[in-house]
Image 1: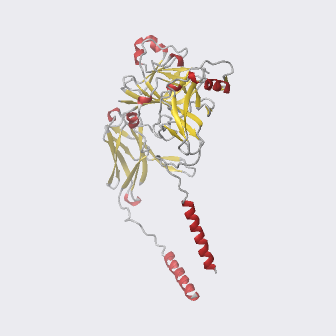
Image 2: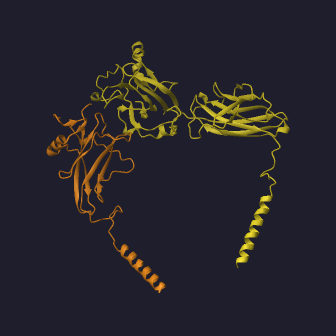
Image 3: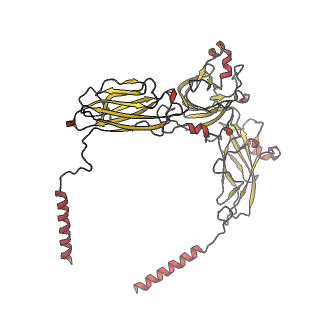
Length: 332
Length: 171
């Protein structure tokens, strides 16, 4: 009984030895004998693609050293990118402390129409280039896709398709300063910007601007009111000493929220995103015509009086001189 | 000998199990146990604004004899969209129920206008003097005030509470 145990364990040990001695490396797949490539989208997949903002890709290409080196790479977008669309001419590696270290491998990229191309200057058989696509106005609400390709000195080429990616309908404007009693008029009706701030001087120069104002900001010494936003029909009891400009009549709707930290509005902190769908779905029935005591990381959903725009106002900072706000706006 | 003891222990455990299962309390229409508890009161009254933050200032005042709960809220609070949270004694339940999803309720009918006198507010919080004065004059309660009924654990005792809201003057 005991002897068989010893024999079997010995046999097992021998078997292990047999396996461990077999140290010839084995390739899992066929060896790579041609130019190959790969691509990832570095911008977060859940992040809405906004007009004027970048979509970032990393395009990797390589061929065996004995076959030659990389000569050029290019990407064709289905909709021409806006000014600023480019390849980063550096290839990056990560050093021991986690920093991305650039190595210049190519000349500056050229963009004409849909095509952005780049010529390699370094004698390299492998590189990963970063491609930045600036979303143009023409792409609003559409889908955009990309065809990456690379050529090598032995005449081979490789292709990689990315997309399609949906481009959001909404606009975004960041870091607007609101000051009490001066730059205190907020409008969501501009054609290009998600939000525009008018000052008292702007209004004196052009009184017709009053009809464009959707909200009036005021900073009160009282802790109950402090940073406040008012629509034209806000009750007077809750806006002491706030004088509305004549002609301001927009009964804007608001819903106060706290802790809705949009990554794009908060300058790349946090990881929530407000997308087109949120503007379509938000129930504005429970709105008010004033919000009081706003603080940092608070915000408000807004719907303009005519219902043509919805917006989200995020409070970046709330200080003694006023508010810094960032706005996403969606045209209904 | 050993096996006999084992059998005896198993039989005893089985008996215990049967005894534990036989305590069958009835279940009410919401699938909740109807217990023997006869306590029937509100222990806390909380109100959340649209930003999910509390709109109360200081603690709510609850008079379990007069069956009144008063929440003191910040100046300027919009009461048409608030989410009430009512804490109850163990096993009790509330009627009508406050929905767990989309519980936004219009509490503006519960707002009382009170003439404040000296000593009503200390450090931003309402004093018992104010609370007791409000509770002492039920004729001044708004007729539109929200009322919820607390049902005790035995489902026999029911008490209707009046929920009032008082807005703190501007601070």
